Image (cartoon, rainbow, N blue to C red; front, top):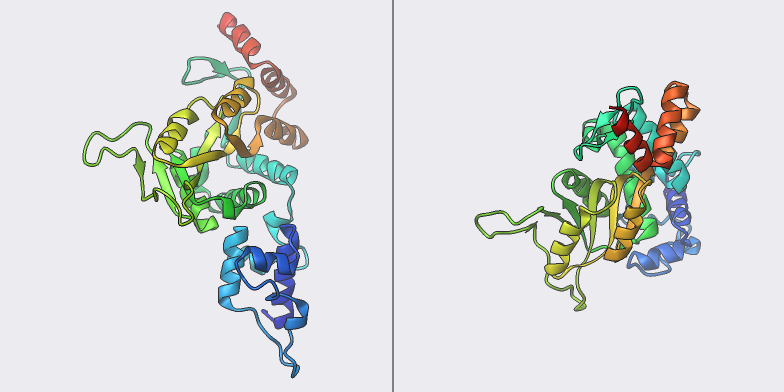
Length: 310
């Protein structure tokens, strides 16, 4: 039941989960800083004062919280993803990937990747879009991390990369209440010859370039991100951040490529998180886990050995 007391409790918990005081939350949401002060929650004649729907809408937009998360703040156990730190989100993401069979391990018959190289691990993030509960958690977690690490006020547009990044870009844009774009790998060969779909302003009201975050499903070494980032920057966007559901986390080239492009990468989980969770749950036999760990520690050497053995 939504009472006066627990609505204000949810606002206080929402503020605390993002490191704000109630007045700080109000100020950052564009409200009068005293809007959420405890002294204003009861009128001088003793009647309860309720927060307006406009106020709630603005703080949800600021934090990226969904209405269901806000309601969950009333419950004793707190707000789901908003009660989780990054390590807990990574662990639950790993559980989700394993439970939906979006990640697979096979040391005895390694997978052949698009590059032709062998790998004892395989991930298919596209599979996740069909699992409603899993998708809800992952996208709530994504919005939470981006709000914490980038700031909702520092994002003007969310851009999905063709093609796997498009649904995730849409889910995240919806949660952050931001306009969405999507970026093609190359301009389409007809009509406006557009490479960026949607409607991005040439400049924001204060004259600065629009700040765009690129969203994709996963990252191995990050080299493919350059096509999208270059296209966005050529169109006048300021691009300093990228988000992926899953980051391999095993290739030094990933760090180097992001650094060279001036991009900070944000992700929910890596192969190390999946391996740790697979071990904790006895998800695979010891031989498979040992082989996967050897691959993660030295993917180039493992692939060379696997290639010579085939």
